[in-house]
Amino acid sequence: MKLFGGKLGRVLKWLAKAVFLVLVVVPLVFAAAFLGIQEASEREWLGRAPSHPAIDVRSQEPHQVMLLDVGFDSLAERLRMIDSATQSIELEFFIYEIDEASRLISQALARKAREGVKVRILVDFATPVFKLAPEYVKSLEKAGVEVRYYNTTGLARIFASQHRTHRKLLVVDRHSAIIGGRNIGNDYFDISEHYNFLDSDLRLDGPVAAAIADSFELYWASDWVTDPKDLREEEVVVTGGGLLGQLSAHEAALLAELDEHKPSLNVSTCPDLHFITDYPGSGVERRRVFNAVSRLVDEADEAIFVESPYLVLRADGAEVMKAVTRKGAKLTFLTNSLYSTDAFYTVANLADSLDMLKVPGIEVWAYKGQPLQGSVRPPASQRWGVHSKRAVVDDDTVVIGTYNIDPRSANLNSELIVICRGNETLAAEVKASQQARLAQSVPITGTPDAGGYNALIEGADGFTVWKMRMSAPFADFLDFLL
Image (cartoon, rainbow, N blue to C red; front, side):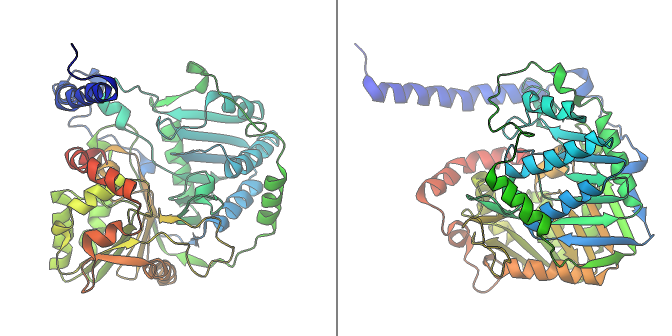
């Protein structure tokens, strides 16, 4: 006779399987990986530090720079840059959605390719977010656009599969570039009806753009890149003409608005521009951006204001931040609350780290999730979250790029940043933007009225809070993957 039957029996059976998976299978897999049961190529990096001239380039020639703080502005500027191309266009992104924004950009790229411009797209193959399937690529290639995937490694190679290119760039004619936090998708350009990101890009014109293009060449030619034709094709339902079909009435109206959109963007000059990126491939010795960020932190004398969608700190990272405050510098973080992000597991880790962050001189603020006040266009959605990866150091140095404050950016992903020194105009503009976002945020630690854990979860529904709490043990144990 069965002791448990019906729904209760099925629940207990699945619960037993889950416990077995967590307590037995996962530890065994990680033990096997650490014992070296992987391909030899994954272990060859130990003690080696590959290099390339394009991964660390500093120029003191004047560069024109322009902050793209509003998503709609950034989309309009991208389309204008693409339209101006006469020789080459390079794009590299972690996410390339299939939606209105990607269709407008893809069609602009296809037009330039038909005119004879060399157009290439490199997109990461991370399974949870990958959308640009081979079926979509076919139409782009027919128009003359080349597409490649970065790291199609399967989950069987545990560590190699965790390495991703998180870089985001657009380079036109090796002279103009846009880098920053935005991927290609509606929610990065303020046009999603469900949820949008507060993000930040930097347009730059000058010699460093050629170095960014050279870094793209390094990634394009690396062993981590796969031609979509070499993958087993899966059935993909292409609706609405795919990426290059006729525009819908809504898309045509959006394109017309973008064509007419002439935002008042400030152009300033950066006298000292530094581009740094990681070397392609897995292995901590290939990571360059983390060391550059650490050096900048050491240079700070007065204040650092950091904006990052995730704030995942381990003990060593917290110690670096405490060292800043011991010098007398103030350290301010702006990140997401549980309500303003879907990454509940990173909030779980932050919630567990609050005591570690209760240090004089460190403030942590969480964005509350509402549309930013003073927007020129009516907000497309009522829920927003911070996605910028930027910092201002001592009111003089600006850092903008793809680097999040988390172990994944430090140790696993390929990232890039641009550092502009000596441009107080740009620093003031970024800081004003950060203060506007701070005004719609809540203090978590570091201020007399800081709300701690309760403020961090304020506004989130009960199910999301439950998911965050349930994920907390895993977020702590697997913090190196966050």
